Length: 98
Image (tube, rainbow, N blue to C red):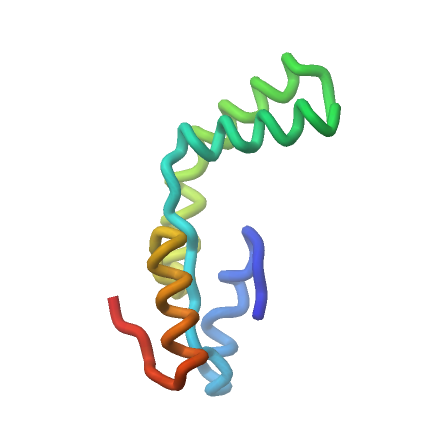
């Protein structure tokens, strides 16, 4: 299992080696992601609030391109609920198809 923004980098190689059970890129409402990230970063006092807002807006704008890149590398864009169903199906021995 790999997780994170760079996980899609290994999809093709895992598929080639027969090691890939599933590859997902989370598709979430961008505004909600922005607010969750901002709340987390403000609570952790990572940087000045102004910097966090600017950074959050930059990431919000970049999110569609990130998702396109991940799907271009072989990950399936899906909402969290769909990913959980897919993983549960894989664990139960039933390949999941959207």
